[in-house]
Image 1 (cartoon, protein in one colour):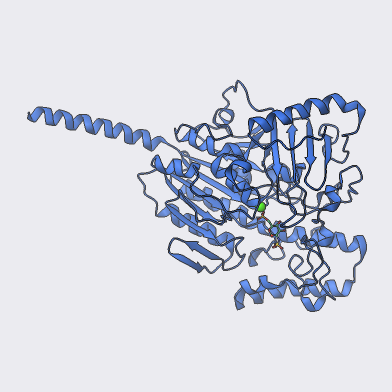
Image 2 (cartoon, rainbow, N blue to C red):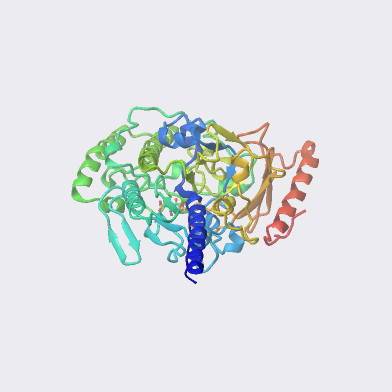
Length: 521
Ligand code: SGN
Ligand code: CA
């Protein structure tokens, strides 16, 4: 009897140990996502504007995707797709106004059920309380750049400091306090470089005196496009002098910018100053007040004023990215110093792309390249060779299946993306998607007035249908026209390509179970 008990004990232990060691092998995941970070502001992507050595490190030691796209280029929808692996029309977050249904299946929930310790730190923006996380500490709504209000299960409180530092510190504290017997998955989501682009005090003036190159398409007149471009409101001309340019109300005659709100209200938007405490504000104003005084004296008009606004925009937008890059460096150092680098998948991305003056714009939403593209860099020394660049089309739909695959969890059939695991580890993929489907919904409510549209992008072509209060198609040949200046939808030479691409578009709508909008021809 005794020997039977003894034998069973050994068996149990062996099974337990082998389960444990199997569990221990599962990789940790750190998913870093910033907000509105364009590829044009990452040096790994060849930025002419800024150097981002820490973000680049992920690319150098891992893989860089050159064709990574978002399926609906706006914040909350992008986040809902990330969590669920499903298109907006299925996860219920079509635009920034909807509340995410936290009862849905998400990859953090599945990881948590499988024994991962899961955490969510930073910008959430999905309105409902986070679900599927052992720890969560999130910004309220869009959050504040200084001394942000942080919400968790116990309530909400302001934390002193600059938002990117606050989020990084909370993330590191969460890693420090984790259950060392479990693999972990942490989502660290930065507010920066979201509007109104407030840099850390220590980075004020970091780009002062630098002249940023005006983008080739800065003076796009939209002449070949549908009216969707002219009817939108996201031109740099229209930026708020107060909120965006940070001018003193007393240094401007009146607020002339619409800021993308659709009409010039004349209302001064200066409330960001109230986020700062008196010491922070002192340093802030010492820097910005001289810019404000220069503006008043220089009396710029027309294109001179427009280009001045562009330079100011770049100084502040890029200023916030310095801190994001520093944050990535801190996380990479943490992994090195704690022996975690080898067994941790680290991802850097942004919820979507952004216009840095291309087509005269800021903001996102359109299916054009700058806002469709999401930077995507991934490192996992165990399986991913360094210094790789991949041109396959990957989507934010693919994150959930990828992480589940790495964790050894079966990917639910209802998820609509694919695991990128074989792709990044150099294993031959028998098939991969050759086109992607896009659908944007936030119109007419909300900001910037970009009309509803859906479309398809292949490696060569892009076909877009703007609908709702308009019925207009655009077609671009990305090989001959990478800047998407010539809409050739009516060019007879492209008739056959357009028809083929349109058939493929309708096929994708059926495949992804999107409502097939009444076809126009
Ligand atoms: C704010 C901004 C808009 C921006 C939306 C959505 N206006 O409303 O310019 O498009 O956020 O951004 S602001 O004057 O308040 O800064 S998103 O990234 O959350 O989708
Ligand atoms: Ca965003």
